[in-house]
Length: 249
Image (cartoon, rainbow, N blue to C red; front, side):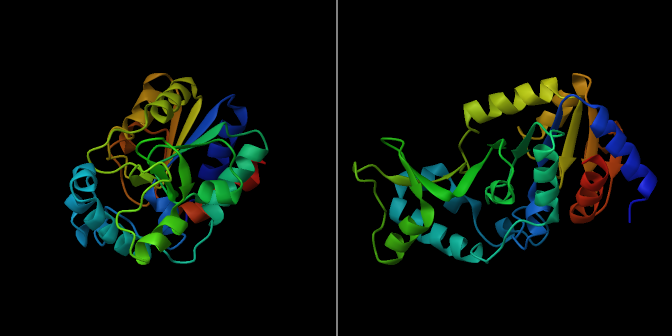
């Protein structure tokens, strides 16, 4: 367990900062029981990533949605926010956290009460029409797929796509620009539960550090930026973040 002195020093740094940004990865979601995608036992070791490439959606939309339904069933566990999500929401509500930038697509930050959430990879609870851009509930669309509508289409006739970044797609420009702006302006950049190895999102903590931010990393394992971090806390995010919030709020 991380010693109290380290938590207190990080809390002092957060309290003194004018701008604090959190950046979260899969390690925050796995604590809620959501499978990891890229870890040793991750989903991409069991599924062919080519099946979830944007080329597959366009070339074989029916097959794409059948495989997507299988993946959705594996992710359909009844999960909710964990103490790490709740701690970040508490920090934001108390005025000590500007925003959460997340690589996760589960929507748990919003469910925990965080209001300013930048979703770099989208939200799997939604679908989007590739023609008109309308967004709607993903579960209702998955039910239509189960009932045989393959591929599912929008009322306008356009093809529906999960509102997440597929392989072969760029991150949403607006979300990435906002995340980069937050990183450049942060006094403290708190990277939580991320291996910091998936680009371009992994460049955000480097951007923050290059613009003078204090970089704090909370992750079970070493990351490529551990040697640049003022705080490199290798511990459970569901233990560290609540203790941090208790001292700051």
